[in-house]
Amino acid sequence: MAFALSSMQVTSTAFEQHQAIPARYTGEGDDVSPPLAWHNVPEGTKGFAVICHDPDAPLVKDGSYGFIHWSLYNLPGDITGLDENTPIGTPGSNDFDKRGYGGPMPPEGHGKHLYYFMVLALDHQTALPEGLSMAELLKEVEPHLLGIDRLVGTYQRG
Image 1 (cartoon, rainbow, N blue to C red):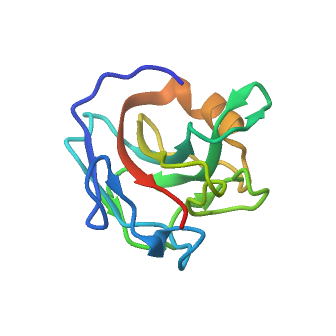
Image 2: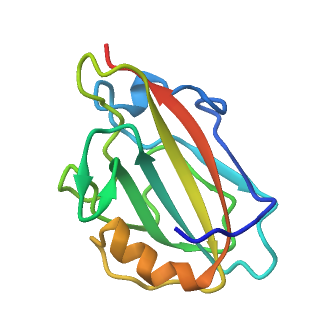
């Protein structure tokens, strides 16, 4: 992914940076996306995309590593966050071979995993089709990336 220095900050009312993600937002719970908020977005932001990636997952797919739990795009540039289980945006494909959010659920006995909830600020409003993979999404949005920040949560099964 392209590097885009930014003062943007991503937070959640559900968990703090590098703290445990509540079970409600996992595959062992209600499996709904957590609320996210962001501020200090780069000047000229006209759209957003969100990706949740688990780099600790033992999966290599299409030259990438880890596990994609969520990609959401076509988000307008005038929003400052997403509600829990958000209905807005266009869902991409995750590594569960589904569309939308699929919560953390590392393999049993695999220990604690990190989950990167990344918000990408874009210089234009996208109108991309539903179901893009993360690689397809990044190919479309990287040239338009103004800034990026991430909130990192943890989860351990059981």
